[in-house]
Length: 350
Image (cartoon, rainbow, N blue to C red; front, side, top):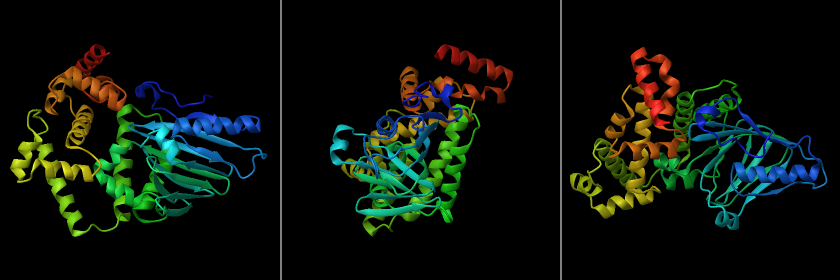
């Protein structure tokens, strides 16, 4: 039992969920302190309040990585967590947290919205803004932690602001699909390869994106134009992904848009052209590592990196493993000749 989740190479840690902390064998004061510290290190800096400081407090937290996502399961007696503006200034964590209640109930508060969650319902919290989670009863919840850029690249920062703090039913529709899928992956004991884990994460994000899109209010005419223009720019950028010398200004000329307007479109979505394109290059590279037999150097060139060493460093920073190491688990499905080539790549990459 440790105070924080394992930080090893994801290739070695994509197994069963790791117990981060259980307070059940700890004295009450120590258990509360350890619980507060563990929530800070697992999610973000928060204050924790209990209904009665003198009562015994029992809680357990398990954590499991799935690609870029982290899925955790919390079993706990009633307590409340609060993230304040002061905490945001001292801990500028800006990930999104999805809270899904599987037993008991809890209330989420953010952006002047309040949602009561129970029976599989869930809500999204933005850790870059103040929030409150009030566990009113003994409860169990699944918490999905997602990098900010991963969601706003699909839904925009504006849409995420609109849906943060809303409650989404887990009983029907897309919300039901998301709820059941997250409960399933949180409870699975299967040991997954890095590639399989990344595929699970991608499926979770696709389902969540669809569910949140349903909750977002209809776009105004101006916002619809901005949305459509942004998609046109992104599609053009994707067409020239292989060419590191093709500039945003050239795409603007092709589409009849000024460079200033393009930057405005990305700013409204909470990104910049450069950061969006950088993420797209790495995402496409990940797909090709898993779906093709191309070498790392070939993939690096295909997605627009000038230097394979730079590509490998960027990929490791983003996904926690080198390109060849990331793909290593999939060697068994390829021919012996390809297996030997990939094995040599992996040894060289290490």
